[in-house]
Length: 180
Image (cartoon, rainbow, N blue to C red; front, side, top):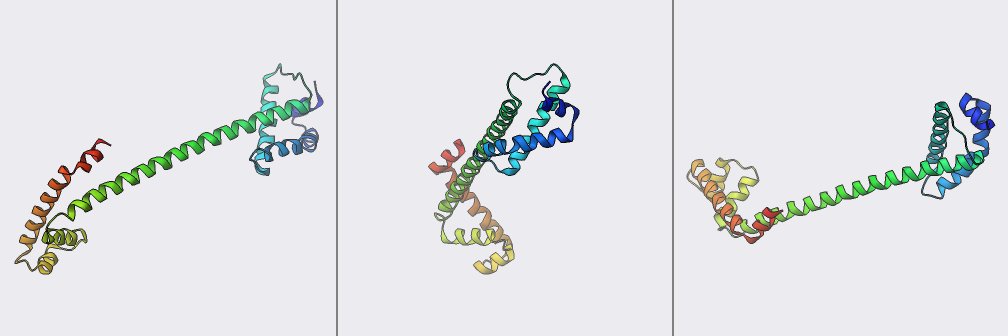
């Protein structure tokens, strides 16, 4: 058996250091030239050693090429697998951001539908509803609108809301949004 394989199997520190000295820089160069950094190279090196160790523990493991070629191939495979996984993650993140953009657009469209139909109401209804949206109490609304009572302000808000809802529902944009 190759001395490196035997050293990995036995977890021999001197052999592991020799493998590092003789093979890390080649693997590091590959990782760096393929969108990685030194930390990535260290991770790949470690994973390649662990992979070989696990296969040796299972038994009946031999390599047909030089250790250098096998180790480099193992590292290359591990790195490409990581890149592929990261690429899929990036695609998922891009999809999520696309969904966020579509949701934002839908919310903006709903808001515009609401605002456009609010502007079609009479001046009194617009004022009452805007005061209500500003979280003013019915007592304040009654005072600002010079109504006789809070109850009248409440009733006016109810009637204006009902009118606004009717206008929104007959707006062609409403059916388009509802279809989404």
